[in-house]
Image (cartoon, rainbow, N blue to C red; front, side):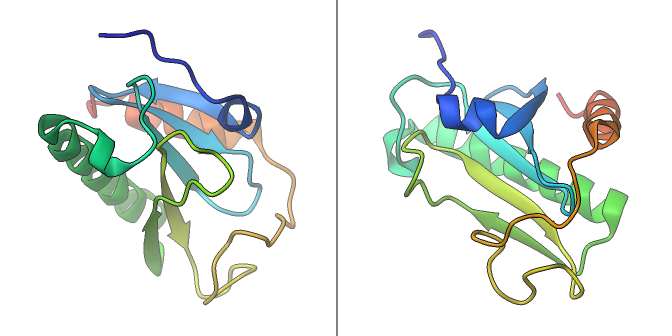
Length: 135
């Protein structure tokens, strides 16, 4: 496998949680939402269609695992899954637990700054949960 380089903007805006088979999982520095990022550990990938078919299937499995974990652990009203890449070209998938009373509901979270400071304990919580057999 080629060396994996994380885009600096992703590194600066999130904290490392764990590695899955295909993706690195990171928690966005958002004090309000459980906002996880899945970044395929493949060099030079900008679009989902750039991944080999096997990796595309693995990515969906990992998105499903993270989505189920969010649903089970924080009981959101909705789970948003998105790949945008308008500001960061490296393929990354946002998996966000949303609530009817969150700062941007029902709109997109993008462009709505967090109300609360990021809490490192959230990162610890997700590191523990993801360390319990998701790999």
